[in-house]
Image (cartoon, rainbow, N blue to C red):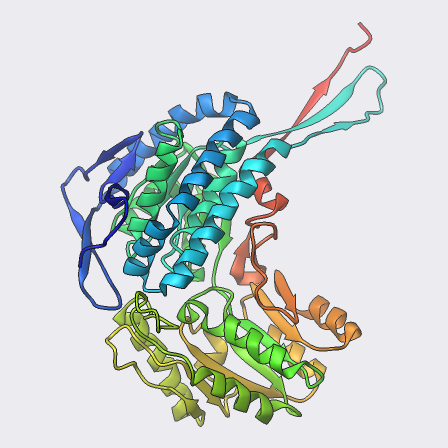
Length: 488
């Protein structure tokens, strides 16, 4: 398959190191395929530890001058990068749909979402403030300043191949850091197009390097062991995040981790039913269920359970799965045949243990990467669909009796990224929001993410926050300076 772009030069297949496009030292490549058709899209340079080491060294060199620039000067370059992303929205969306599978409409939305982080941090980077601390001594003054943490290594996932990059690169670059990025092997083309636009915007050579590769342990191992890297930021699974944290311990690197989720949507019997159905649909089936904050468990109070399932399933029946380039498609494929099989295994486990398939429950007829939008009832907390992140278009609907039951069920997981609840009671809104052990809670709303909010979780869903003013803190070190002998 050939990706048709208005600007074909945005389709890059080499690594980008120290301002130059280059093949891997070995000449090795890996294939990127369209999950909707299985057709090859491109062969991309597959680099390893040696090239990653050079990229880190280039980042360290480039950071010296970048850090010395006034924040306003860095901001102006980021603003230009933002404009170029917006101007090339259609091509970036086409690349994303081709390699990731989501519908073209969703891809356009993600490009805009991703660009918003560059715009936000271009502005917020000019507002890195410090403090003056009164001291007990009259001849001293204490000053607190914030400085860039250093070279940042970033590892990003395939489900949002644009936005997961910009919300790491944006704050890192805005405060004066340099960055080395390893994009997911499934979706490197979006990352390479983004760095091409950053290069056109005038980002200095070596400041933003992209090292694609199929050997993740080799690249990741260099990132976590190299003493020049001062921070590792990762979005992905909890097991991989734990491994990276262990590896970073040897050099005591700063880390920020946005890991797995098991988001509940708690719907009380006093909720606006239509609003709850619409919100649950968005939260569950966005990107074919492949988001870390998507609704993994729908917890519905028994008084409205049947009515909710009826309305919810009727809406799901209107979905149309297919190629993301088809205008009639509402939901594209999942990322791989392996992913589709894992989703089906969870569904069949639930069915074997007594669950009822209201709609769907089977692989799609469109190809090996497709799975039917599914609704399950008669589910319980012993099933895999309660315990494990589904990461697919499957909605198990659980029943609860009391508010206490709902909170207990919602918190009965090692994850704590996002949770949602629907109720018309203001008191319940506060009680349940505060009782839920999650980093983010949506009340009567599931579209909670934007560049202005602190995105992140608790428990085994990670550490640190991305976006908002708090998103800068993960890329800054706090330094105390004591000025003495001021009476001289």
